[in-house]
Amino acid sequence: MAADWTRLAREIAAFPDEVRELSVTPTLDHREIRDRLRERFPFTAAVPLDEVAAEVSDLLRHGLVHVTSPRYFGLFNPSVREAGVVGDTLAALYNPQLAAASHAPAEIEIEGHTLRALAGLLGLPGEDLHATFTTGGAEANLTALAVALAWRFPQAREAGLTGLGERPAIYLSGESHHSFAKAALMCGLGTGALRRVPVTAALTLDPEALAARIEDDREAGWCPALVVATAGTTGAGAIDPLGPLAEVAAAAGAWLHVDAAWGGLAALTPRLRPLLAGIEAADSVTWDAHKGLSVPMGAGMFFCRHPAAVDDAFGFATPYMPSPAGEGITDPYATTVQWSRRAIGLKVFTSLAELGLPGYAGLIEHQVAMGDRLRALLVAAGWRLANDTPLPLVCFTHPELEAAGAAPADLLPTIYRRGRAWVSEVFLGDARRRALRACITSFRTEERDLEVLVEELETARREALAQRTQAAGSSGRFSARISK
Ligand SMILES: *Cc1c(COP(=O)(O)O)cnc(C)c1O
Image (cartoon, rainbow, N blue to C red; front, top):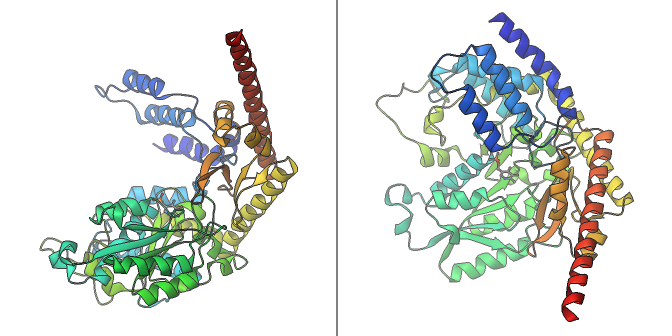
């Protein structure tokens, strides 16, 4: 057993360096992986654990998009730190049960201590605050909707929402996260309850347009339940004007939820914290540790200033659960979506403790500097920027591609085939303008990685344009032949 762990420890130490040289994209496809699993693991006999682990490592090495690569410029999936791997390993070993507080006082306090520190960075109160770890941002956003509905319509706890006589409405922009569409379905509101408000040229939710939309909707029988502001949109990293949106929401009697799933990282450095001004006025906040805090998935966070509303949404007493642990201590099963829950927050605690807040500020500032550097490199190579955010997320197009009628996505097959970097396509604003999107998600990304990305973009751009010219040439010959 000690030999197994020695091998694993060596792998954990070496992988962050090795991943830079691996293909960012998978080199095995589904069929190859399936065939290998069928052949080597029919489950008809026992296989020694060291062989199982070696085979799994090999499959993962060659069968994943490596989100921990410093050349993965993708969705908000970070490189992970050793401290997070240690925290997650201890969680697996001790297997704390977080349904009832009395089962896991150590982990309850570790999580509470961590959440209070992070809440403080958001300007949320230390007292009278409900805070919990979630599987991710989607669960935190679902929680926000469930709690907002419980707060706005207490009568619905027993009677349900159908008896209200008015329809609960959720206000958000086209740039907000699609988890709210799922949440609306799960809470029985239907997607019609998603009332989209136009965005400004900066891709932010417009408070005046919000007020106007609420006014119009009221006349049509809608009741404003929830306003969703996004601090750091998934597509473009735009930050909605939180203070003004809080005022409009309060005037309408609606709950303000700030979805800072990724943009919450700005709170980790005093230099960027002012970008989140107004977040302290939110009724609830989503912030993902498995994005900006570089911890392994999944670790979301939900903060809420109204613990009583949380009780209304999730409070139940059962005959089989242990009785409450004591004064001021709440049982997670009676205040959250989950029942049995793993020690999600342990890896966040170990990461925060190992690095400290000043260390985190350094990581975030490095990522922001890399974002600025990427913008400069792209502009120097003739690319045009398509978004404007101080956060390390860059959207861009190339005038030559546009002139040739090529889509940004035409570059992706070449980039993914070569496997040296990873970017994605995005659709921006109410007009759904297409652009490429590169986010600095790894604290290990360095200037040399940015140079590789720009090289890959240039190679793919030349290939796409050459293909266009060739296609235009051959279709030209073809039509010439027909016309003869
Ligand atoms: C990523 C993201 C989510 C969803 O979070 P998960 O952790 O993937 O569940 C929600 N909102 C925003 C703004 C996001 O960027």
